[in-house]
Image 1 (cartoon, rainbow, N blue to C red):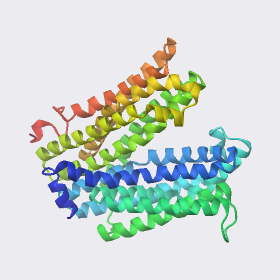
Image 2 (cartoon, rainbow, N blue to C red):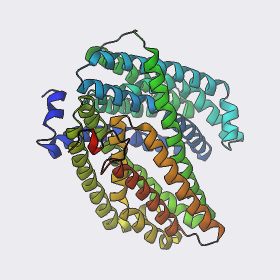
Image 3 (cartoon, one colour):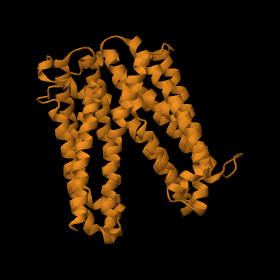
Image 4 (cartoon, rainbow, N blue to C red):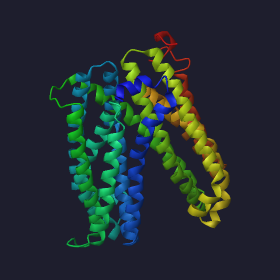
Length: 449
């Protein structure tokens, strides 16, 4: 079945179609975190300095990739809409422009980190052997930064075309290669010497360039290349980048403040918070997969000018995402003892349980917050999402700081505030659709149901 016919069938068999699109996206999402865990386990065998250095390097690079993820998100929206209009020439032009920008930005950032790797490590609090290892890791790893940008942009292009399976295959293959090279280069095997932290960076870089080349070959086959660049398209992508920058920055600010508040309560609170946060990192992958799938579906219908079908699709993806959130809530509530035993020191369990329960109860709310993000990405409503997240973050951050100022904070309260922050995001996201504000792309007056 072609992707277009699968999109068209979504309204008739929504949940099966959504699952067929959502599942490969999920596997694409979880491949890298699993590799990261294995990478961490390998480096941990070298020593605490090497492990700390890996933490410095990965935080720096993951922050960079998160900030510039707008190339993937923007490409997916533009291409899914052009696909719905049956105007792939526009999609081809925007996709190629996004890839060119990805290579240019990736090269500039890679060179900057390569030159100032030591200074960046110092800013991250590293010194002595940790600084030396972190600088080494960054200087080898940044060679692959342009490849990472090309890959994440390519995934956005392919998602926009409704091709969820190819990114999954590439993600699994690249991360499998990374794991094999990790062991070979970190510890030395056969003709390869023991390279330690540098080996881990080289393994990642080699794998990432392999993935980037594969992505470019597939996009050439599926979409084609063109150098017919339109300055208007460039301005549109950069405007999306501006909105996404402030949105992502607001998210990071709130999460950092929540972690800071938990850490200030003491080591037990900090440990319990970290355990809950790590599980949330995994649950967000499932919810983000819903957002990515919703973005392609809504973009397809919206690009075709079918506002009524876009609204129906929005309702259906919200129902499916809510079911996923409810399932996550149930799993978390039923497995609290398991995660407490695995992730929390005995002294921190008394703080862990009530906060864990609150975090579990808000999973369905988080599901709506995520999937409505995807819906609005699909319509290109980036400015509204930016403003909604900024407002929610101002309110949530004010509550965190107020609780700290009056000395009433607790780990459970921090998670109640985090849940309220998600609740605000979900309300803003849903209200933009039902009933829809005057400027909403999916408002009733725009021809909806």
